[in-house]
Length: 223
Picture (spheres, rainbow, N blue to C red):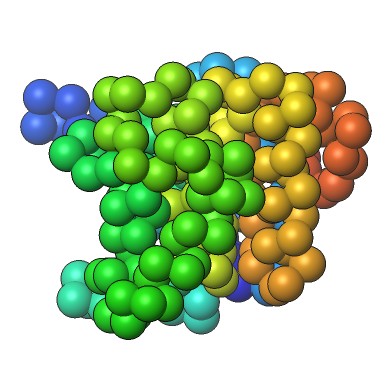
């Protein structure tokens, strides 16, 4: 499903390459696998998720997702690959002019699903995350935790093959965080490959699993 071989990433600063955010990463995640992504702030977790979401390409090394070499793929090939990836962003990235329902429905409509199917799937997912009574609310009318749950529902409603989550429990209380983990585990049980970046050590302890550990852009361990 995912394979990195000697991957590095640096961002441009004033038009010039800046320091490497990721260095010499080599690991693989099998289809249907689960990985925690752990490390202190600045370790490179978000940069790695951006790579896996195909938002950026490696500066060097080889990244393969769905058996496609991302570095060599034509730009026109990437949108179809991204549609197979669900992403829960740390900053939610909800469209402010759309209701909670329409934010969740958006990826289904882009994929060309019929409107009855869109309505059924979006409503089911919003009920699952506890927002059945908030479907018509705009993001500005929702709390941070509610916005986080809308972002989670949007990421999983299309049943992606690869599901990435960047600190998905950051704005959730313990009960909501546990409900989210049940959802992620169910997605994983149904065959999705899942990668979850988190600082929540208690959550990892309650739900032990293989982990990728980063420090200063390098992989400390893959266990």
